[in-house]
Image (cartoon, rainbow, N blue to C red):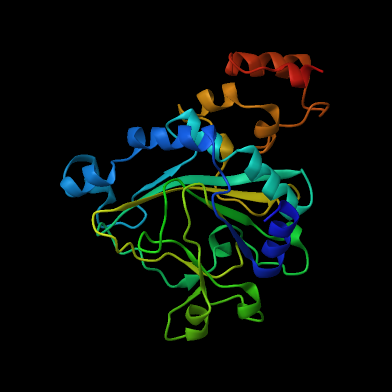
Length: 292
């Protein structure tokens, strides 16, 4: 599926699944760093209740790590040029921002991962979804870092035409309440590098990991139109105090930093003083794009 078709599918159905959309050195480098961040499936299942493994046991969200990530390769994955291109195609503009990003590890039997169908907008914005203007919709992406077949807990998604006209509340629906959602859901299972892009007003759910002694690893990133100032989850000013932020920034391109709210060249913020002080804060950053 090319970008225009993917963008059209997202706008129409509220989601699009792109199998193996990311590949090559960027994905491989991120995969190579997983073992430095999370226990392997073998390590976890050898001792679920011991050491660092305890943090993943009994809590479906225990495997979440917020951006910035512990390695630059993992950080770079969520600003991959193909993800930026997909987000720009969906919103019809290059003027986009990242408003949240996380890693997530799940281990079979560690917790209950089966969810009800729900929409994410309630914890992404204080407002409600807009169906008339795509600028006000949030774009979420899941990237499978390892293969996620059906028994590894892929996300299931309900196309927007199925849920058209559903009220802004309740937040979610159990199977007995809306069996039609569950009957018409679609699986986002796919190989490593698959990107699952969906809207914050799209009903979706996590599914159980049933493969014995297995694990699921994913990276998540949320994009928005630059004008959508009321959609957000992570405050980058706060996260920039994390020790893993500086290594990412110092090797990032200007285009990638614009996604986090850095002003573009020519913006009134940029003066000789602010550029000099930026170099002090990030000695390894190439500030020439802002000096021009």
